[in-house]
Image (tube, rainbow, N blue to C red; front, top):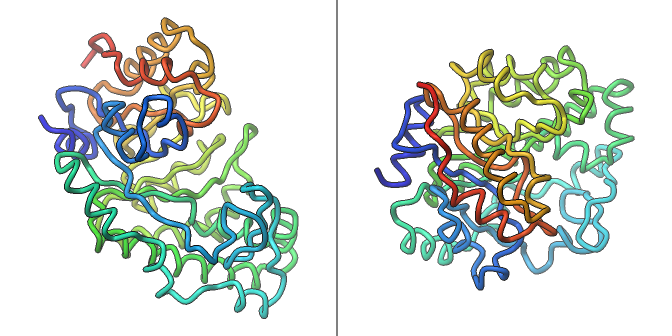
Length: 328
C-alpha cells in the first residue's frame, strides 16, 4: 500500500496496512538530519504525507517584526498583539482575496509533487476565523468585544472566513488533497469560549468553510476542546488533530465517544521528544496506537508539531518504531 492510499483509507475509517504517519508541521530539525529543504524532512521521517510549502511575501511583516497585512503584531518572529479596533482598521487590514496567489510558490510546489508522487499532499495553516480574529484584534480586545460589541466581531470573523476559504481553495487548485484548518480554541482548562458561544459565533463559519472545500478537512486545535467535538462533527470535519494529552485530552475516551465520526490524529505527548529516552518514545507510540488504531480512523502524529529543542533521535524513533499489533 502506498502512502497516499494509506492516508485515504484511514480517512474512510478503514484499517490500512499500518497506522499512517501524519505529522503536519515539521518546523525544526531538518538540519539535524542533513536536510536542506524542509519538504524532504517528511520523506526522511517516513511520513505518509508531505506539507505543501508556502512563502511569506518580501513586503510582509508576518513572522518577522512589525504589523502585518492582517493587523497582527510580531516581535522577533513571535505574535504579541493585534491592532484591529474599528471598521476602518478592518478594511485596512483585510487584504483582497487575490492576495492568496502571492503566498504560494507554484514552481516549488510542483517540485515537491514530482519528488514525492506517492505521498498525500496536504496543506494546513492557522487561518481559521477564531484564531485569525483574536490575533487581528489582540486577545484581550477580542474577547472583551465579543461580549460588548459582537456585531463588530462578527464582521471581522466573516472577513477572515472569506480569506480562509480563498486560501484553501487556492491550495486545492494547486494540488492539495487533504486540508488542515488551524483554529486554536482551547487551553488546559477547556475551550476559550463556552460551547454556547462557539455554536453562536464559530460553528456556522466552520460549517461554511467545510462546505466550500471539495476535500477532506481536519480541524487542528491545541488545548482541551472535547466539549466542542460534537460541533466539529456537525460542521462536517473529517477529523481532528492535536488531542493534547497535556490538556487532558484522553485518546481512549475520545475514540469511544467520537471515533465513528471523526478521524483522530495526534495525541503523542511531545514531552517525550525533548529527552533521549527512546524506550519512553516507544511506549508513547504503543499507547497511542493501542488506544487510537482499533477499527481504523487513527493517524500517528504529535499533539502539536516538531519544534525547536526536540531530540532528533527521539523524533526519528517516533516515526521509525512499528508499534505492537493492536486489538481489532
